Amino acid sequence: MRIEVIFQIAGIGFLTYIIHVLLKQAGKEDLALIATLAGVSIALLMVVQVISELFMKVKSVFFLP
View 1 (cartoon, rainbow, N blue to C red):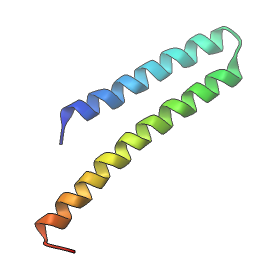
View 2: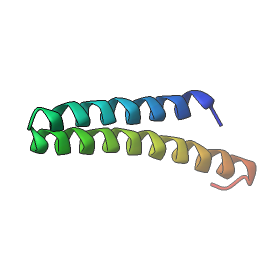
View 3: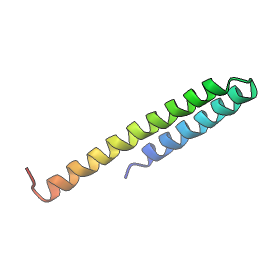
């Protein structure tokens, strides 16, 4: 597995956390929730891409159509 993807997902999580805390302290709880949901969805899209690559590799190993 590529280690860069793990670091990218961790970086997105860290930035999402910082943005969430800053917005919450500023009294913008609704924007903090939206920022958190955006960060989670970006990370999930990255995970889906990695899983797709995994399925393609498994498919090629077993010579499936």
